[in-house]
Length: 165
Image (tube, rainbow, N blue to C red; front, side, top):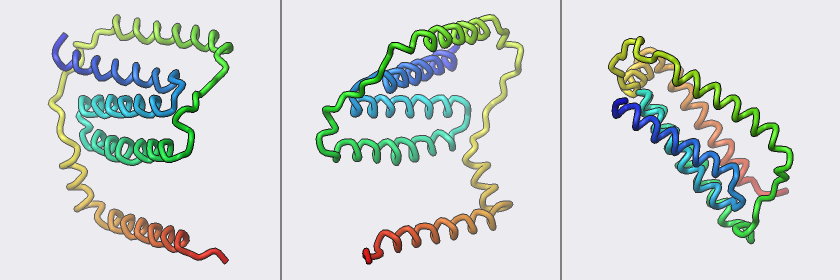
């Protein structure tokens, strides 16, 4: 087992454990903070898969946008910080058994598969390739999408500013 495998297992463990806490935690604030660790774990796995652009987008969009919006929405709402999430857990036994069997099958496949027979290639960073493609072959589509997003932003701002009649 090399360092790459150890780092992957650390990121996978962080992702799975924090995702489990997102689902099982009763407090909404704690659940949102565990979601932060889940997003960072997924971004770390993207980095290990040499998808560095997707990892940066994961952090910027999900952590920087969606999670912060969720936290501000929860924290600025009156009296929601002390609300406990209550769910009926009596019907979870069949699903838990099915997930346990599925996890056992996946783990046994992972353990008994010969992973060393595939050649390992040096990963190439995707940011340079995507930047080159967006500014050469797909420059027209890139500019048209930018104009479309600008039109959508102006439309949303005009709808938000419109006075109620």
